[in-house]
Length: 412
Image (cartoon, rainbow, N blue to C red; front, side, top):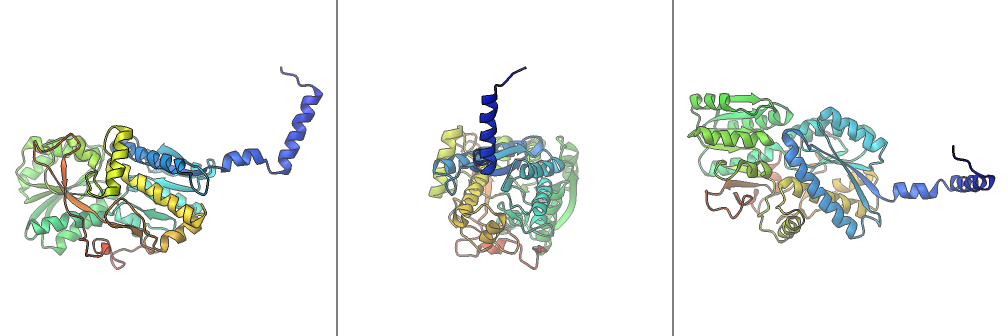
């Protein structure tokens, strides 16, 4: 047992009394000096590969911000964890706020997990900036005052590809079969696809709902062979897209395949020669914009590979969060919400700046269609896709590809 003499005890008591009188200055300074941000993203499961890129982009932005002096002279401390599933995501979000002192929440790719995190954010009145979920429902009936969405929604993904299909006369009078992920994101994407088909005189002859743990698509491919559609549409997500396009190529089906959702990590994983058709993206590392090129060069130097679109969106999301805190001189969620709602412009490494809409908190920005490069034309394993022109066109309003107030039931 350790013993202490009277002088030691008196010194400790005096120090404690002094600290108490000042509200524990040394301890409080250590706890509040950094701006703590709670970050959740899937690092396991069918979205795990995307989450890994998310963490890399976020870490790079955090390091750059802190190296430049931080925000309001304070360093940013991002606490990042695997969200795992909707229930776990909600529990971790609450813990980050209550125990860890997170001033705001960021991240997520799964629409289902984003929904539960947004509910935690609303209860605690803390800003939550989503970076990857694309469900229209999140921006619609499930929207709330404290959630802001940086990725493009499903309707925009459908419109980005749809405009290309229309130009190529692959919609009117055509028969479609869709393969859809059986969870909130897939259901939401299917609704957007059905609306597009109906508006442009196309026919959906079959849709298959597919559980997120399915890896063997042969039963569905056999059904497609029997249905003989004009176009096959992929409404899947994560590594299921990779598995599908590989097996589709192996089956040698003659029907062109397009997708209303694809992340570049999944395209890279598919490998050269397996991906075909037209797909949408929110960003790609070959985008010919100086700021984007500088980001790609820095990321590639740091990590030895180009950034995937989730790395890009986490990077720009933290940068615009830091901008908001700096300009409001606050980490208070109410002040940050008001700032974003006033239409501040943000450089997101694209040709046109982006802004949040006040009525649904969606970041309005360009999107792009792309098509796989012919076999033998790629410079490396990441140079698989040819990016199409931005949608909308430079002389068109960014709003035209987004749901309108009449189409979106959001009520903040």
